[in-house]
Image (tube, rainbow, N blue to C red; front, side, top):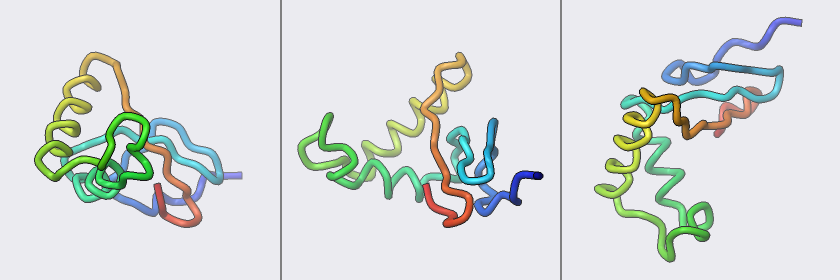
Length: 84
């Protein structure tokens, strides 16, 4: 069975199953980074209140820099729901 088409064109998957896609971060995904790292429920183990927009931009820039050195912050996308 072939993998389903990518529901989020700004995400490039490096591996994928029928249900999940694992992608790398890029500049076009700032909205997803804001949603993820701005959510206190997601960041509660390493931030008491989530992050402000400027700090999220810094984290995304750091993730992109690390990717160049094969240190990845992977994003998991639920293919059917188009959510990560």
